[in-house]
Image 1: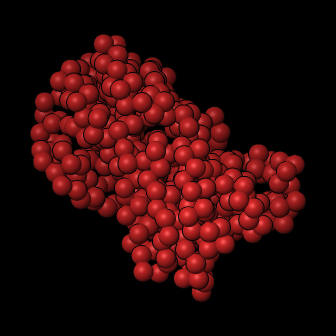
Image 2 (image 1 turned 180 degrees about the vertical axis):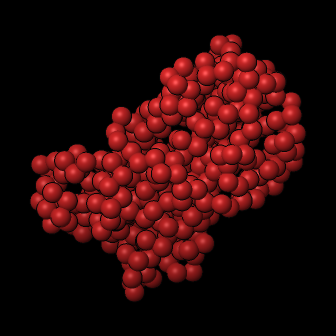
Length: 366
C-alpha cells in the first residue's frame, strides 16, 4: 500500500435530493448486534468495479488499515468486488448477511438496484455505510466527495485552458455512467460552469465508465463534428480520458485539445506531465476511507456516528443521513509536486519513468 496522508478535511455541506423516510427511523430498526462483538468485528466491504485503479490500490487497503488500527488488530475486513455487475453485488450482500458481518460498507454499482439488499441487511441487524456513491435504501451513514464541486472544478479548468477561444469551436462532454448517482452530480456541476460559455457539440453518458466506450463515443463525435472543430473535451474521469486521447491521436490530431479527468490515476498524472491531458481532480482517498472505516467500526459496536460525521445528506429514499463530504483539488502540471507527491500517493520515480523523464525534468519533478 502506498504511503498516503491521513489528514481528514471534511466539507460541511448538505446535499438535497427528493426524499422520504429518515436515517434515524431506519437506524432505530437496526439491532445492535455489533455491540457484543467488542473489537473482534467483521466489516463487509463491497466495492463496485476494478476498471478504475483507485479501488484496489487505495480504497481497499486504506479501509483495511484503518479498521485494524481502530480495533487493535482484531477487526477483520471481508472483501468482495462486483466487477460492475449490480446483480453480482446484490448476491454479495446476501453472502455477507449469511457470513454474519457486523456492518457493511457498500460502494454501489447501481444506487437504485442496491436498495433492496440494503433493506435486507438492515432487517438482519446489519448497519450499512454508503461509500463514495449515495446508495438508496435505509443506509446509516455516508461518505464521499463534494461531487457537484468536482464537476465545477473540471468545468472551470476547461474554461481556463480554452481562454478567449472558448467559443471558437465545439467541445465534447463525456459524462459517466447513468447508474452512478455521482455521475449525475459531476455532470450537473460541469454544466453549471460551462453552459453559455462554450458550444457543446456532442454529449454522452458513458456506459459503465469504460474507457473503450469513451473511445468509441469520441471517435463518433470527431466524425460527426470534424476533428478540427473540437477544441476541448470534458471527461468525467481519467480512465475515460485515456480512451478519449487515444481516439484523438487515432484521428491524426497533431495538437491535442485540452481534456479533463478525475481520480489522479497514475496514467492520468503521467499524461498531464506529458501535456496530453490538461487536468485531473485529486480526491484524497485517505480521509474518505478513514471516515468510512470510523463510521463502520462505530456502528458495528452499536455506537453513534455523530462523532465522525460533519453534515447530513438526503437520498431519494432516506432523509438526514449522517455524512462526511471531502473537498477536492484541481490537479495540473503546476501542482503535482504539492499534491500527489507531497501526500505520498506516488513518488516522483513512479511518475517519472523513462518515457516521462524529460517532461518531468522540465516540471522540476526529478
